Length: 467
Image (cartoon, rainbow, N blue to C red; front, side, top):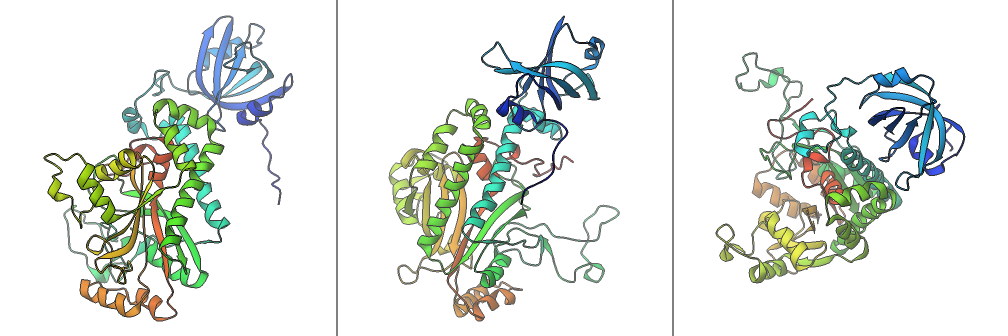
């Protein structure tokens, strides 16, 4: 079905693509820069439809020159004028203004000046930083990736499921939880929670993962995916962690370990290719900031990912990883939860492309992962996808489908409140599996941004909630 909505203005993106010459056109946007060289003035205008600006030229024939005194950086204006070819090759088209209306004035204290502002500074004005070219580029790519997530899973026949944000389970081991309470101590001193007064009659948390709820819907719909906010109450003040982020979690029935590996690789390639196709202007800007980004994206797009067992990776690290006082040779052994520096070493130094590590030790993975009992009593059918520049991008597994085995593990670990989860194995259990992908890390991968706080609109991290 076709959409019927039309705008009363022409968007700058369409103007620069269709370039209807010598016609009267109306555009609206924000002033990125104004250069006054009487009698001629130059205005760089952007309306958010693309990262390119439209150059507006105000000549000596302009009928209301006084209005230019009130136009400053950041102001919003409406311009009527004619598009013509520009004499300068770097700006092939420009608009000669016939009429300008100020829609919103901008104070002289506008915090984003024409000099490049550091990302550290921009984090202090989170509500304004989207007005800068680099943040526009990042969030336009984030938009492309959001759309690509839904497009990909819908194309392969997965149903989109909204799993709850408020939950009574903590997905056991997925991360520290935020506890929900309706009580607030007036003196701000910690107090015990009085269950009789609580809205919910059992401990409830903000979700750390939609996986367990997603599994229940996969058992009716076959293949599903979730894409929503996730919360981890970890006091980790690093450039790689957030307390609130978005997570993509598909769950597919009747699949095996190789299917899961193929799904993970295909999904990442699809989303990266979508950005390479749809965000050429944004990438051109970001390539200038990160000289490695272009090669990394093209490597992901064109090459098969390496598939390496955990045991093989440990042997490679023993032989090749440069050890020091922090990482001793004897510490690299079976059962080590690989630190990010070792993950990056495998992708950037050894294989020089994404690596799929699989068959991890049971002792460092979650209770619901299926054991490799026929092959190896000590490993589970878990996988992590490691990518250059990021480290771990995806973590997933084949789930244990046996009621008896899962019940035994749950009892052994003393896990409670999961009878409903066991029911999924009690009534028509099937082999199934899936993965979790932190969406912000995917945005980092495709933009080359090194700090995760720069790829989400309003980052939440320890001691920081901006607005």
